[in-house]
Length: 190
Image 1: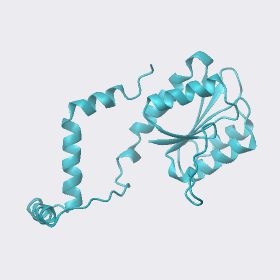
Image 2 (image 1 turned 180 degrees about the vertical axis):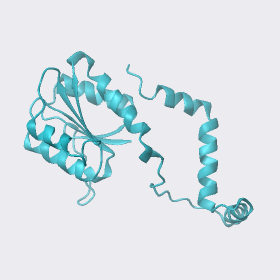
Image 3 (image 1 turned 180 degrees about the horizontal axis):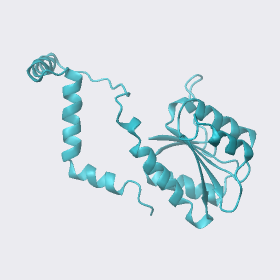
Image 4 (image 1 turned 120 degrees about the horizontal axis):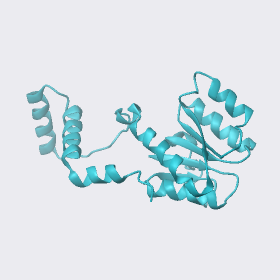
């Protein structure tokens, strides 16, 4: 899972939230992390992330822009606010929109417990039915012999070669006890 984390301040709360994301195995981009020197046109894009987490007491124009952009791309957004603070009026109006209500989550945190709402949100993202869609292309180079077998097996099972391979991977994933243990512990707060 790839997420973008935005906070206008690099403080202890921000560091704890990023720590929770990293512990959960999330691939993280953030305005608080040093920019990588990527060639022009290869910069990290918000369109290549699965969601956005915004941690802010006050929403600056950059936060508002990132939230609007992410929601317009039908990706989930978590806005974390300190407990007791009222959400920004713009945020409330976005959450009232039927198109955005399911994708925008506003949650509150106590400084010492910031990891809990982050982990709960990650769990909800991991359970999202979109995670089961076959939308990631994967290039696989095969030998002629393996290709012949795959074509033969596809005919034998009345499936396409891609469907048969997906089924084999799913079966291996389901039977792999080590991986099942990783999934079980994936979002535990440490």
